View 1 (cartoon, helix red, strand yellow):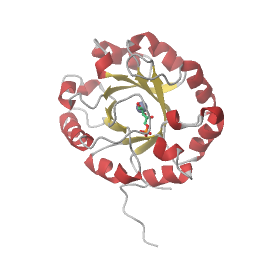
View 2 (tube, rainbow, N blue to C red; view 1 turned 60 degrees about the vertical axis):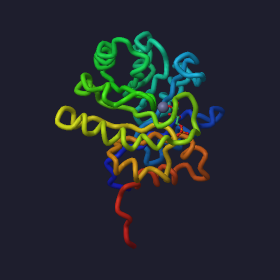
View 3 (tube, protein in one colour; view 1 turned 45 degrees about the vertical axis):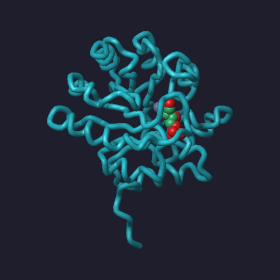
View 4 (cartoon, protein in one colour; view 1 turned 90 degrees about the vertical axis):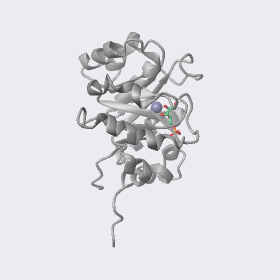
Length: 226
Ligand code: DX5
Ligand code: ZN
């Protein structure tokens, strides 16, 4: 077992939907910390993934918290259902919330951790007046909507800027990175200040998904001498 402080959240979007229970069991048995659940509406993003009935089926078998990423317009309509479907963390998009403060309060009222996701073009500085109310910020390192995309390098500087913005105001803030994350960039993301690594393709398309998770979990740690 590693002594890593960072969390790994495999994204079920990249699982085999015809073998969901098998893939959920694999994550249960791995060193992963959370399940990352991507809900898309075909409006906020140009794709539709799956909805709450599928999430409920995942929740029935998942033995780790569900980290739900809502890529939908007007998420307020679905917060209660999201909680009832098993969410531990609910993340809404900054770009989809006109009354973000109210939405975050509603998420906390339900007893969930509240997160905000930023699209690649959305500056971290826009969070200045809400940073103290956040449990998590998800920095999108691809344009949301699809798995398997190329990591956007500008993300590193956003992590550093976000950590500085939160310093002294919200030191418990979790910084999550979503999109194009894998063994090739995990060390650098952690060194920049990331706390949670979401990984879809780099886990589920790997020959040995559990080993891929373990590699991400031990990233950033000094290599052990034999
Ligand atoms: C993208 C989703 C991601 C996606 C990541 O819109 O929010 O969570 O599943 O997939 P990879 O790791 O394959 O880029
Ligand atoms: Zn996601």
